[in-house]
Length: 404
Image 1 (cartoon, rainbow, N blue to C red):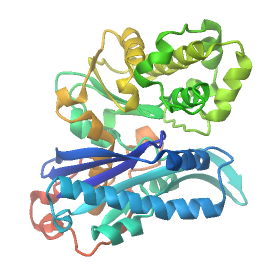
Image 2: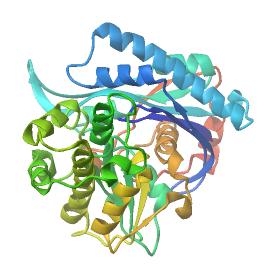
Image 3: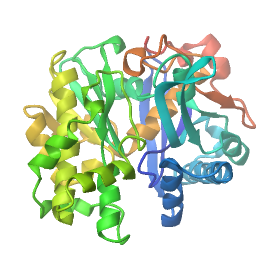
């Protein structure tokens, strides 16, 4: 099956789109065909971030952006078809993660119920209507309904992309929030360890936007952090945040590490210069990643290689800090391991859409905390049924997915 994956992360900087081919096998084979990024206009990014940051916006804001992002996601899918020189009707599925605007995985009492929740927007009905392609979306909510945190959902795809018989590998995604999937050498999916480590770029981006008075919304090449000095005292205080003491499964978001948390840091250390603030925040991301490895991964397995993806992977200051802290594991480019880094997250949701269409679970309960493996997402039918449907019942095109 040919499947397009669409993804917009915590940083809300645009739509990542990846066209992949999912073939037969157990686990199914995953082949990259084409991928690209469609940046959001700056004003839209600020609207999304405002909506995603408590207290957020109104129901009207959510309603309008849900439809607008659906249009942009549909446009991204059609542009991928055009650039890959494929007619949309030859694409079987779209898997759309959408744009998270609230992630509340910690249960709270509501009436007679204990409720956890997560919300992604980018209306899948609009995507299916504009493209004609059957669209799978709202992946996280079923895992939450099954008692999980709805995150991370990419581990099973990371396993398919990067497992190795001889080497232990970790996939480190440095998006707005950082998450890691650790895969022991020769592992089965049940041996995967995956969780959010804490902030990735979210605090760096917010700090860069503030200290440059809106001239930039990220620390390009780590240039601001490179001339600053890490405040050991401030870093030590930041590491006392209760999230880092929790054992997996665990996930987080802008609710924990957004603008309000940066306000706390500024109140705690008001004398930090802009450069020292960026240096300290960069060290915070690196140290929390390393802490996650030390506490929850390395006691269980040996990691030989760490494949870095996400925007933070292009920050040389952050990479240097990570290399020092994660040694002797080597930092490697995902492309060298067989799958382009820019396509990993979008490709993962393409793969999850494939599993959903075939009625197969896509979550890893050990990673999310769900009570059981569940089929993820909701399906909005397009103008044609995916071409592999008939084959799935009579041939290896629908070969069993890895057991989770």
